[in-house]
Image 1 (cartoon, rainbow, N blue to C red):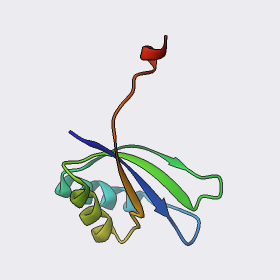
Image 2: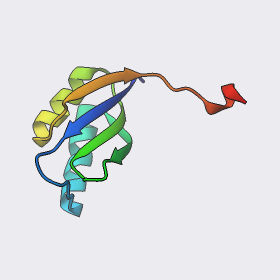
Image 3: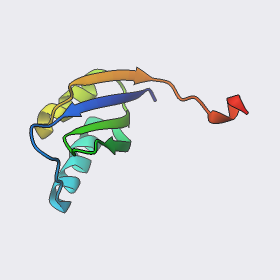
Amino acid sequence: MPRYIIERNFAEQLSISDDDKAHIKEINDETGIEWIFSFLSADKRKTYCLYEAPDEESLRKAAERLNIPADVITPVDRIDPGIFA
């Protein structure tokens, strides 16, 4: 499945409750996307999230349903560090 990085900019510091996490998982499952991992900026106002998704539109739909930003969506490929060994 294709992979994407989503850059999200938040107006305030990000804080996610357990209920929020369950809701996010539910919407992701319904939309057919899978969160792999994220990086959070030091000021906790920006995330870079790696997802597997059928397409960019699926990611935008999930973000819209969750009322969270999806400011930049970039398709990415995996590079194994072993190729530099």
